[in-house]
Image 1 (tube, rainbow, N blue to C red):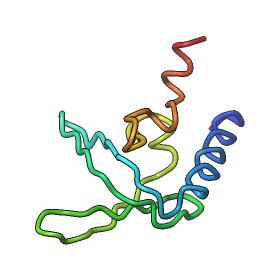
Image 2 (cartoon, one colour; image 1 turned 30 degrees about the horizontal axis):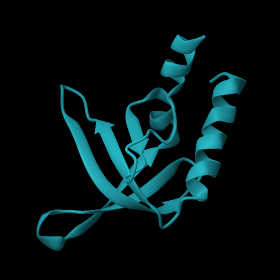
Image 3 (cartoon, helix red, strand yellow; image 1 turned 120 degrees about the horizontal axis):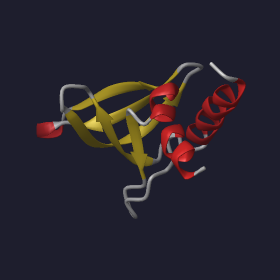
Length: 98
C-alpha cells in the first residue's frame, strides 16, 4: 500500500473514532450486484476494522464489522443519516477529480 493510502486509512480511523455512538447509514457492496443499505450506530473502532450495530427486522440488533480499506476503496460507503451526504469520499473518486 502506498504511504498516501496508509495516511487515508488512518484519517478514516480517526474520523470514525470521533463518531462512536453516532448514527450512520452504511451502504456495502457485497458483490454480484448485491448492495446492502442499513442504518446503524458506530459502536467501536479497532486497528483494522470498525463495528456498526444495526437494527434488524422485528427489533433484533446485529453487529457488522467493516474494514477501513473498504471505505477507502468505496466498497463500503458511509452517509450522514440526516443529510444523506457522504461522510468520506473514496480514493477512487478523489483520483477522478484530479
